[in-house]
Length: 252
Image (cartoon, rainbow, N blue to C red; front, side, top):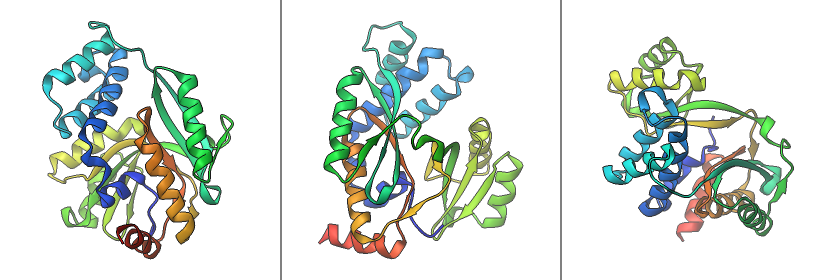
C-alpha cells in the first residue's frame, strides 16, 4: 500500500484546501440537513451522528448546527437538496465516483461534465465505474498513536474487516454497519484517528507516473472546489517518490 489513493489523506498533506473553513461548513451543513431528513435524533440516526461529529471537529457553532438539523427535519424552511452520484474517467483511465448534493441537478451535471473535459477526463454512464468501488468505513491512525499488534487486536475484536499497514499510517477498514462500533473502540482506547469516514474504496488501483499524477491531483482539486461536490472517490495510486516530485514541482 505504498502509494496514495485516498484524496482525504493527500489533502491533509497538501494542507491548502481545508483552510477554507466556509467551504467546509457549507459541505457539512448540507450533509447534516440531508442526514436529518430521516430523523433529528442522532442516537437513532447513525448518519446524522457522524455528520454532527464532523461539524464539532470543524468547530461549527452550535446554533448553525441546530438550524441545519431543523432544516432537515422540516422544522425550519430551507433549500431542498438532491443527492446523487456522477461517474467519470480521469487521467490514465482512472475511475471517478463523485458524490453530489445539489438544488439544481441539470446545472451541476453540466458543470461537472465541463470540469472533467477541461482536465483530461470525461463523464461516464451511470454504472460504468461504480462497480469498481465498495462502500466501507475507513479509519486512519498515525503510527505514532498505536503499535500494530494492539491496533490489530482491538480493531478486529470490534468488528473491523482489515487493518492495512502503510509507511506512516494504519488504515482500519470496516463494513459500514460496524463503523460506529470500531470508531468507539478506538476512542475508548484513547487511539486518535486522523480520518474517520464512510467512503468508497476501489477494488483495484491504477498507478500514475509524474505527468498523470499532476493532472489527477489538479482534477481532484478542481472537483473538490465545486460547491456541490461532497466527496470524490478515485482509484489512482501515486507512488511516494512520484508524490514527492509532484509536491516539489507545485511548491517550486
